[in-house]
Length: 544
Image 1: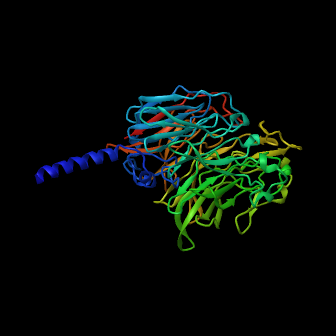
Image 2: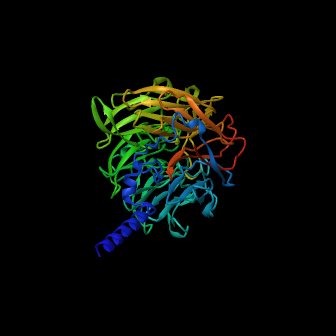
């Protein structure tokens, strides 16, 4: 009897283990995602957006043997393939330009199910891209170009609910990946060049019901409404089109916000224009603001601060500090106290000529840029670091930052803009060409340790750091490269056949480590940053 009971217990344990190993994405899984190499379940790998893969099967010695396992041709054209692929429970989730969701077998690339979203014409500033999905329990969540948030059954693709996040006829759109926090799915909106009022939404994962909304321009009920002249807050911009981060211990959500509107003409919106170009810290259950830090008050150079606020514990002034590390488009890396938002330090990670900084890190415009019509600004309109994500390695204490150094002259136009139409408030004129880089910035030493050119006028591909001492990043010339994380030496490269505008990811299945990358974009890149041709999207998976 004892043997029979033991056998039943053992069988039950095995079955439970099977269910746990192949099952839903739980809160526990999300909170411990950094330690789970067999899946990629966050946009940024973990809640802190480290994009660090700890496994070292692919390392400095073995990377020379890395080769493709399969190539998935999506057949989708019309925009860049910018996805961060999610992997869980035998499924890989790919999203493409123009709102297509393709779910494939990660071992073969075979399509398991697909959803092609039908939508009307949408006003877009910068292309019909999509950067990925979010996973929770047995569901997958995805935002569409016409500003819908849709939930699907992860196994079958059956639609569960559809929430309208915003009216696309008012130029609201979604290009970023959602973020799961507790039993909510969070999403931001695009449309900063059209005079929208930006916000961050939280929806119930089971019903699609709106739980809360945080507006990124301070209205009359906000004490910071006086940072907007007149009623300019109503069309003040502040888009939230890049995925935020979360600290479960503090129960705070961190999100980057974009430019005020109109982008270049700040004469019609005097004041600091809170909470544009900021990191905001929000209470998870209510969306209530805990703190904010603004990187570019009353911005006139389109220096969005939408980049991921990285949740990192690092040494500063002899103490381990709980930080938010934020790489802003304005050319500075900011370190903030995660609990209070207090400024710790800021450093330049690229060429900066438009401002000095005061003791709180606030940029102070240099006098010669008061009238910028004949001045070339660095960073220009593209950044610095634009949306492509950086990575952080706890092995080296470095950030690996995709950087563009391409100057822009900003010519203001007088008069008010017209909300609902794309209006920059002036004309940006680019220098004949720019240069892309991968930059390694040491958080502890506060120094750039190495900088390697990334071929092309700008670097629009994110980075991945690994426990094997490597940094993976693509480039506009179509190559995916592996760099030595300490020196920047290129140890391996592969021609994908098209410009790379996406960050790599990695996972381990059955003891084999894989690296994946999306390839396909406007290619080649022309002088104004818009491609002369369009390449269809392909996803490539590599292993040793």
